[in-house]
Image 1 (tube, rainbow, N blue to C red):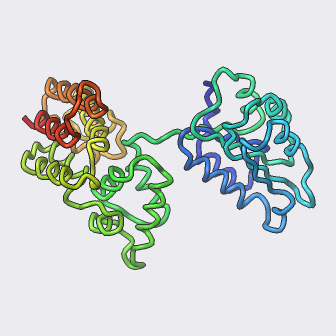
Image 2: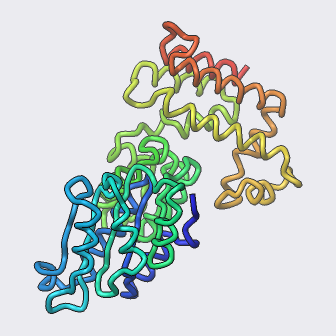
Image 3: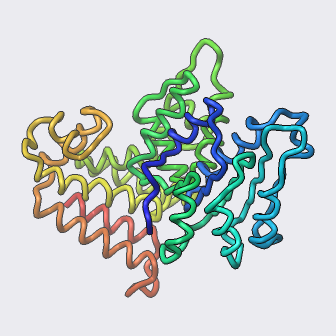
Amino acid sequence: MAEAKNVTFESIMHDLEARQFGPLYYLMGDESYYIDRIADYIAEHVLQPEERDFNQTILFGSDVTASQIADAARRYPMMSERQVIIVKEAQNIKNTEALAQYFRAPMPSTVLVMCHKNGSIDGRKKDLLKAIQSAGILFESKKLKDRELPAFIERYLKDRQVSIDPKSTQMIADNIGPDLSRLTSELDKVILSLPADNRKITPQVVEDQIGVSKEFNGFELRDAIVNRNVYKANLIIKYFDENPKAGSIYSFLPMLFNYFQNLMIAYYAPNNRSQEAVAEWLELRSPWAAKDYMTGMRNYNGVKVMAIISKIREIDAKSKGLDNPNTPPGELMKELIFYILH
């Protein structure tokens, strides 16, 4: 698929906040959070409240045709400099030829926002992609990787003058996962719970507000594995086995796979004895984030790490029912932890 011209969420928001509005925004991808943020900002800030009744229209892709959208976009605004048309569920529009024609010559007085969720434009529609990029903004909203969640959480909270420690960050990331709409909703709930004179999120706050145990969570399990603390790791696994709602193999397998995959890469760092060099090699957000990899290289050799990665893949397949008729997830997790630590 054609790549957007270095368009990011931040660059779009910067222009919008400066009231530099384009005639066309095609927002697509698997992460709905950024699509909604941009569309909502345009809906709330382009027009004055008194202008919206006649000049702001919300359409749904399953209810209109491409021709109807194009005709609406070609209308002139009424007693306003601009009109805004937001098309939700744009992925449901069947025939896009009329839109492609409009995209080649959009009305400068119309701000047309196409919200295409749960996927992207078929890469074979090169004429459509070219038309969008030449006349407007083409933005692909991608799901964040698990390793990117801590930085997102810290940045989101910093923008709201709230601090958080690394353990609390990882607890939230492990428990909520990469659904940014749910994640930001939970963060907002935690922020509201903070007293005015103490704007810091701690593990106790996370436990109280989100319901994640500060003693039995993914962060502590990973810490136990990194340090080869057999007793602590088994205690946590026992807790999860008895409290399946608190955590499961399906959330911990990606976390462990990412850690050991990065640990394997760390061995190949040009200077793997330097925490700063390893952090740079792994593209981590700070040297502090490389601490666990320095410990891991002391506690696990390269051969063992390769074997662990293979074992994680095997357990992942079994957790999905492949070559596993009846072993429950809890037993699979115990099998994996025993293999890693022995």
